[in-house]
Length: 141
Ligand code: HEC
Ligand code: HEC
Image 1: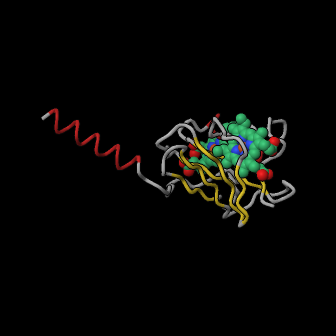
Image 2: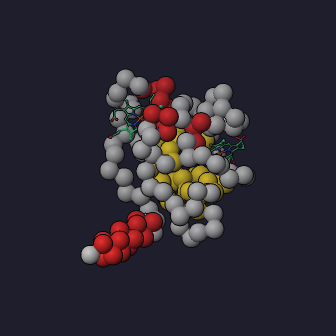
């Protein structure tokens, strides 16, 4: 009995672990709620502990956030990846995790750009914001 339960749990985590693309059930309300614009330039994970990877993609001059941009998070040493897409407010977010804690990060605006060194943290805006350690917000060029 215990053994069957264990097997069921192991199988379930296997199925979840293999999930490739995230269909998210959340609806971004930042254009509506009081946290508004300030949230855009902050590390999403600071408030949203439930997210594993999240951030914002802006146009080439960092002026406005843009919708429908693909952000790809790929496990290092694994074959699994997450393909996220910015919502109508330019934000992407997921609570899905990968088989590896090490990951590669890409922004795909037609031209795919990869982060030269792999990030060690999924809250992209921690660095990609004004005053962050990256030179700019995430942009499409
Ligand atoms: C300063 C804290 C804070 C920051 C930073 C923040 N949020 Fe939020 N977020 C909130 C609050 C508060 C709500 C509204 C209450 C709720 O739904 O949990 C919310 C709501 C949301 C929702 C709707 C949630 C739902 O259940 O429908 C999404 C999606 C979201 N935020 C995404 C993001 C993303 C992406 C970022 C980073 C660009 C971000 N948030 C940054 C506090 C924050
Ligand atoms: C610890 C800080 C840090 C975190 C966290 C981080 N980055 Fe970066 N990222 C950088 C730095 C530094 C660069 C080098 C270029 C620069 O300074 O803008 C960079 C560059 C990039 C580039 C290449 C930009 C270009 O113009 O070609 C992409 C794409 C990128 N990051 C995506 C991401 C994504 C997606 C995430 C979240 C999963 C993320 N980064 C999280 C620091 C970070």
